[in-house]
Amino acid sequence: MLTEDSSYELSHFKGGLPPVFPIMLPKNQILPAVTYQVIGGDRRYSLDAQAHLQKKTIQISCIAKTYQECKLMQDSITEILNGYHSEKIQLITFESELDQYEQDTKTYRTNLTFTLTGVV
Image (cartoon, rainbow, N blue to C red; front, side, top):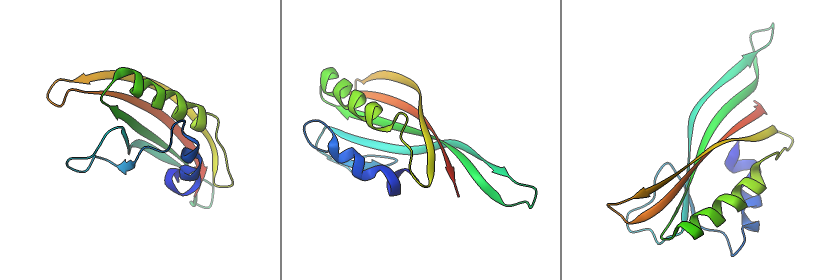
């Protein structure tokens, strides 16, 4: 749902689109970059036992060499996705954020959590 309906929207990222990858960064990936993964969800069933509505919790991680760059990506992604809707996605809502510094790689990471509600 996320990649099909909203990936073109990320091209409006200020300063150009950082590369976006599912789950993890490729080895030796140049930063900044973004990863995403599904971390939860459920389906709502109708009386005919068909799943017509589903909710997914998505974590989007902004990864950069500086904290400022990380926060700029966060602001742009949140602005694009919060409240987004389309034919298949009824609504995307911003739920939470968590800032981290990874000592091993000397990189900053902001994990954003969004809830997507959409039609199957």
